[in-house]
Amino acid sequence: MRLTWLLSLPAVLFVASAVPIEKRDADFLSVRTKMHKDMSGKGGDPKEKYFHESIFHPHYDGRFADHELGYRERKQALSNLIQTYLATMADIGVETWLVHGTLLGWWWNRKILPWDSDSDVQMSESSMHYLASYYNMSVFHYKTPRIPDGRDYMIEVNPHYVNREQTDKLNVIDARWVDTTSGLFIDITTARYNWTHPAGEGMLSCKDGHEYRDTYVFPLRDTFFEGTPAKIPFAYKEILEAEYHAKALTLTDFEHHHFDQDKLEWIPVVKNVDSKKPPPKKEEPKKKAQPKKAEPKKEEKKTQSQQKGQPAGASPEKPPITKQPKQEQNSPANKPDPNRPNEQQKADEKILTAQAKREAEVKKAEEKRREKEQKAIKDAEAKEQKRKQEEEQAAAAKKKAAGEQKAEPPKAG
Image (cartoon, rainbow, N blue to C red; front, top):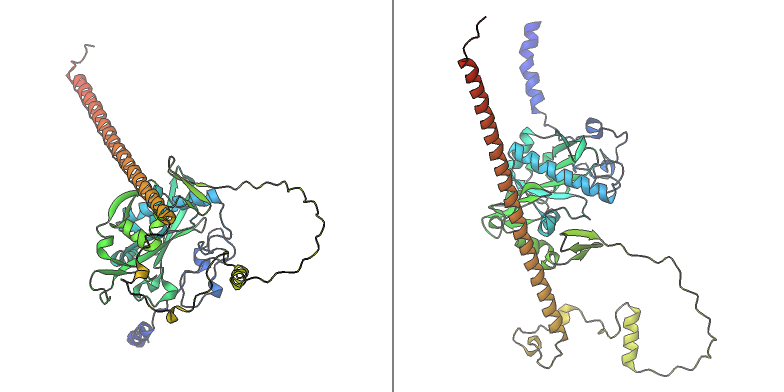
């Protein structure tokens, strides 16, 4: 009987191995901590989608959170999130770099933009494969002066990362670094070489649609972000201008914040609303209606444009572009009019001057930060050298004292 069972075992194993492995979600019951109810949007998402954002905010993981954090609490949690991620990736030997809004925050003051609610990073395809093979669903515990109670962070890799095609719209995020206390996370995407790209060799593509020439990304630059060593693309300025336009690198007022040049901080702008209502206006006696005079056709057109929400004096609606005649580049219509008032030219020059001033200030601030970083490194090296010298002196003194004790003759009884 036992022999019959052993002979039939290979056939059973063969049948079992022929069944494809199903890609399963890391569901709520397998990862939950303090939560008693799943707040992720899994129920309303397509079956093929792996990561499920919360039902109350797209930048929270509903398996670990049921509400949004306040302004200050979110800033602190995001800072801890990127610090722990960068430190962990450095420890396990995974090369990663800042992108998108996180890189824009680095440009301004080496910090996360205060109105942001997530962070974005990238890594190479080999790094993502290494992460999936050895660290998927690993939890890292951090207890630091900034996190005195301790906090767990989880690395989760999307099993669809092996699909390199941009047509996989439901799984454009390849992995996430999740704060299991607040539910905030970092989106991790893979920069893959696209060997069939129309632009030729050396093109990197991400599943979320972003594409780069590899010389714009590599070699990576070493820097600091939120006080932690980090890496950024080589041509970071060109990448930011292509994604957000040049104005995003100089505009100092955005999302109800103003950038303080002296503090190098984004300061929230609070509008003071006067609670006192204005005094009621006195009712004036109604005037008798006078017969309207006929207005010229031009005025009628202006009135119609104002009713449509256009400013007064705006030109009437243009016909479709396809019906407009194309103007040649060398035609008089494209040449500047010498008799035209120069108010617009002055405004353009003012904008360019402000941009140049902003770039000069950023360059100066960057040099100042670099000097501080170099000074901090030198001070740390000097401190370490001094510590080693003190240890060597203490060891020498201890050795000398031990030698003197051995050299002393024994005392007579």
